[in-house]
Image (cartoon, rainbow, N blue to C red; front, side, top):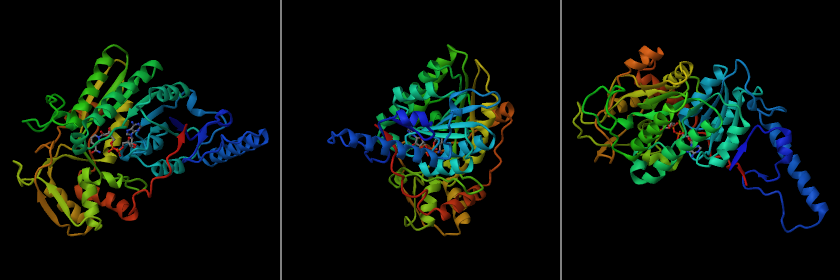
Length: 419
Ligand SMILES: NC(=O)c1ccc[n+]([C@@H]2O[C@H](COP(=O)([O-])OP(=O)(O)OC[C@H]3O[C@@H](n4cnc5c(N)ncnc54)[C@H](O)[C@@H]3O)[C@@H](O)[C@H]2O)c1
């Protein structure tokens, strides 16, 4: 099931099964040929109208041919929080981008903002598809000339993964396999993979280096570790260029306020700490419930390494630039500084100016006490260092977007579909 928002006229003319947002254009009960012609004409007119309104509408597809000097990146999950920020950075740096997302957790409005910022033909196209659908993915790869893949798409909540492990193994591990198979079948040889510090579990020794044993303790971390293993095994048999980036806790948003973090309301309970702080600051929730105040840490709350999303996407671009055939790079992406949840809440209070109420509850299953990175390897090999290391500053940027977008990106747009 997929829908390409920058179809060509001829594609649209031949696609008789297109429907938008659940509207049907063919009435199966109507037998008369005049009726059928009218319905067909209305369908074609509607499709052309939709296509013309799409900023990336092109009469010839720039996306289907390799162009010298232009790197075309497939960004899976590009409608999500980190993926959309990565797309913004790639477009700013003159890459050509195709987003594939099933909008299960992302926001079409974020894609629209990106399309508005880069309306020129051949810059950005959005394809609505599920990565678990191998047929759809193969079609996407055969119709587009990708040079590289940044694979962000995933379900990504530790707590949720303990409640729905199968969903996590399917969405993360199995879908990564499907992506790799499509890359192999279509000769796309560069992959930047979004992994996580959750693959390390709860190491005894801090900081975490890339050599720290990976012993994940929850299904999210295990699913990501399995995906990493599949990528590594496969890379040994090919001349693929691979970068695996293990992010620590991602915060912040576009300093210019165009994009932000807007998880679906139903995910709030599994949510990340910054979202919960902002919800508390806005009075959407009465206060902040911190899960675990009795860890063996300086103030009893968990220690995490918070990496600003702007720095994170910079690491992706640097990684992409340094890819080499037959080489795999594995890097931690963190600041190297551990901050307690209490410190984080204080920074959030300072950023929002709200004296957020805090209640300490029992620990959350699957959480670990202390996690922070050693970012030496990425500094030395990719020349990358975190620049936004002031928690309050990062949270202020995110808070500006949150305050201006009380409903996030707004209600989800009717899901586009092709049947
Ligand atoms: N946010 C963090 O703190 C963090 C930390 C470490 C790693 N990561 C990793 O970064 C990546 C992006 O995370 P995020 O925070 O932006 O999450 P997000 O939920 O905001 O974005 C994920 C995107 O992937 C899409 N998606 C999910 N399943 C899909 C599927 N089957 N087919 C197509 N699209 C699908 C969603 O619709 C969404 O747009 C994930 O791989 C996550 O594991 C995130």
